[in-house]
Image (cartoon, rainbow, N blue to C red; front, side, top):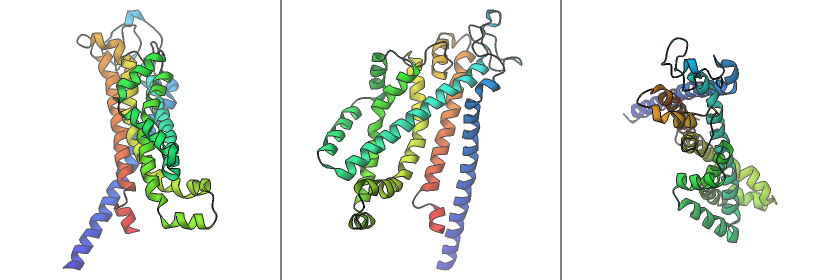
Length: 290
């Protein structure tokens, strides 16, 4: 009986691994398509996203304009496609900045400890004590708005999460036997961090970063919606929603189509992040089988 139960368990693990692999391929392909759309946006757009034609203003969705037009007669589909570049790439850049900066700070604090660790962790406590979006709004307002300043404002308040995560992982890794062996072999601290610490914590940081892309995309859109991010006439999804919010009841497509673009993009990145987390989980079927 125990042998049969073991066989069933192995089969379930293999089936789970195969299912996770299919999900990984599917969501990777969808996110890749989204990124390619943003990269080649200028060639994909059916119309000039910044060309105004008041005779076509506020046209409902139709064959010529599948997502309708805005108050200036600009094609909404073209603006959403071009807006994907600012919305997606700014979120990716933001996550890359805070993941790298936070990880470096966390590794230094966790490995060396001492006064530097105490000071940087107290600084991170200060940032974590404030509601993140409100703090970002204050910083973005001081910087006078703009998509670059919105990314900078969110970067200033978002790095402590990665610093805390990397510090905790580094403290655990630092006590490992192979780290002690590396020290005895004469390896420098920099070499140990580069060859042993960072590779062992990179998976956790990567999964966290992928799950954070959707969150950062929504926060950038929120700042743009409040007028503290991308400024008109720049095509950016949050800014587009803000410029059309007064027409939600009369011309809903002006607001709903960029909102739908945000929703789809965030869902895809979150699903990909969840799948990567399942794939890299220590107890995954893939690792158990190996």
